Amino acid sequence: MASQIISLSSIATPNNGVDLDEIMQQKAEHQGCGTSGGSGKASCGTGAGQGDLAPEIWEKVKNHPCYSEEAHHHYARMHVAVAPACNIQCNYCNRKYDCANESRPGVVSEKLTPEQAAKKVLAVASTIPQMTVLGIAGPGDPLANPEKTFKTFELISKTAPDIKLCLSTNGLALPDHVDTIAGFNVDHVTITINMVDADVGAQIYPWIYYQNKRYKGREAAQILTDRQMQGLEMLTERGILCKVNSVMIPGINDHHLVEVNRAVKSRGAFLHNIMPLISAPEHGTVFGLNGQRGPTAQELKALQDSCEGEMNMMRHCRQCRADAVGLLGEDRSAEFTTEAVMAMDVEYDLESRKAYQSLVEQERQATADAKRAELETLAGEQSDVKILIAVATKGSGRVNEHFGHATEFQIYEASASGAKFVGHRRVDLYCQGGYGEEEALETTIIRAINDCTAVFVAKIGGCPKASLEAAGIDAVDRYAFEYIEQSVIAYYRDYLDNIRSGAIVHGQRGDAEIRQGAYIAA
Amino acid sequence: MAFKIVGSQCTSCSACEPECPNMAISEKNGTFVIDPAKCTECINYFDEPQCVAVCPVDDTCIIDNNYPRYVA
Image 1 (cartoon, rainbow over the protein chains, first blue to last red):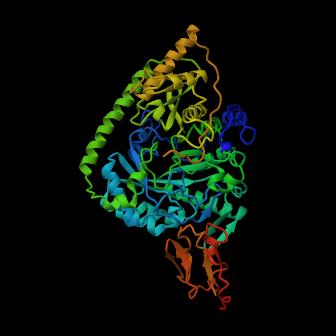
Image 2: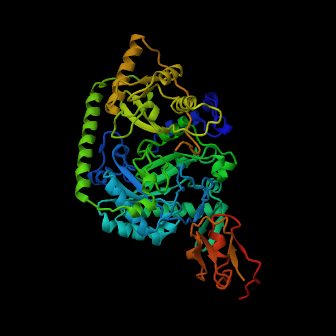
Image 3: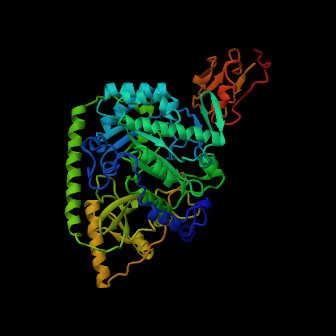
C-alpha cells in the first residue's frame, strides 16, 4: 500500500486546501468564534472538571465520556447498531464496507434488533461497571429508523435506568422527533453538521431522501441545513445538550467550518467536535476514490484552536464504530457478539455499579487535586513557550502504558497556563508493505507524534528510545504510573529551566500524520 | 410489473422496507426482496419509486424485465 507511505517533509508542507497562516489570521480577527447569540459560554468542562459549568449542566456531562474530556479517561460508552437505514448519502461514507478490523463511523459487524440490543446493554453494563452511556449512532441514521431506535430506548430505560441515553443524527428527520427524544429523557444529542451553505453542501452530499422524494445538489443541501438548524434550535429550547460533529474536508469545508461554528454556537450548541476526514481508496467512498485527502494533525489543531473561545471544542473523539464498546481509546465490541451476549446469564446489579463508580470518583478527585497543586508551581510564569507531549496511557488519567503496547497516544499541550488535552493519535500497526514489523512500528509512531517534544511512557526499550531521540523526541519514563497532567506540568517546568540554563534550545517541531485506513493487526 | 432488488448489491440496510406503499418489500436470506405481485412501481402513490429513491447503492432497485410494466 504505497499510498500510506508519505515522507515527513510532504506532511509538513500541505500543498492544497488548508493554509495554516490564513486560519491563524482568521483566528486573530475572529476572537474565538464568540457571538452575541446563544446562552453565554458553552463549556465542556475540559481540564479540571466542573470549571465554570452550571451545576445542572455538570451533572449531565460529568460521567459522559463524549461530552467531557475529563470523564473520557474514566468512563466508557457503548453503541448499539439497531439503525441500519439512512436518509442521506455522504461522500465520505460507503455503507457496503464492513470489516471487523476497521474503526470508523458507519461501520458495524452485525445489526441488532432492539431486543438483542437491550440484552447486550445489560451484559456490557454488568461486565464494565464504568459504562455509563448508551448511544445509537447508526450504522445508518437513528432517526431514519425511529421505531427501532425508540423501542431500544424504551427497553433500556426500563431495565437499566441509570444508563444515559444519547443519539447521533444527520439532523434531516430531527425536527419530527424532538418531542419523542425529550420524552425518553435523552440528555445528549449529536448532530453532524458539515456546512451551513448549500454550495458547500452540494460537494459533500450527493442526495437526500425527504418527504418521499430524492433531492440532489444544492436543493438537497439547502433542505438539510434548514432542517439541521431547526432541529438544533428545538433541542436547545428543551434544554437538551447538543454536540455538533463536523468532518473537516480540506479544500471543501475547512475554512467554512469557522462559519458553521458561529452558526451552531448562536443556536445554543454545547460542544463542537471537528473531526478529520477519514478517506482511503479501499473504503470505496467517493472521497476515498477521488483522492480527497484528510487534514494533517496541525491543520486540524489550527482549525480547532481557531474555533475555541466562547465555545469548547471536543478533541478526544475517536470517530468510533456504530457498535463500539468500552473507553473511547479502546474497542471491546469483539467480546460482545450477539452469540456471546445471548449465551450470557446477566444479572444487572445497580449497587455494585454504584460502588465501582464511587471509586472512580475518588480517583478522579485525586487527579484533579494533583493537577491543581502542580499548577501552583507555575504561578507567575510568563513564558510563551508551548510544547506538545504524547502520553502512553490505558486510562484513569495516568502514564501507565508501555511504549510498545500503545495503540494510541494522547496529546497534551504544555504552556505557562498549564496542561491541556489537545488530541490523540492512533498508532496501531497497519499495512506498511515492505517494512519489517519493528521498523514499521517506529516509523508509524514517529510520524504520528512528530510534532511532540516528548513522549511519556510507563516503560520503553533501548532501541525505540534511540530512534525517538534521533527524531528529536524525548522518551520519558520517569513519570511512570503518575498522573498525566501533573507530569506534563512538571516536565514543562523543567523544560523552561533547561532553556534558561542553556542546557537545551527550544525549536519548532514539524507536522504529524493522522492515521488513516484499515489496520490489519488484530 | 415490478421492481426487483439486485441481491448481490443489497446492503440489507432496510431503508426501502418501510417506504414501500404496497408493503411489497421483505427480508429474505439476509437481503431484501420485492414481491412482484404487490409492486405497482409507486404509480398513483408517488412521483418516483420509493425503493429507488431511498436505496444507498445506485442501480440496485431496478425494473424486472420478466414482468410487463405496471398499468394503473
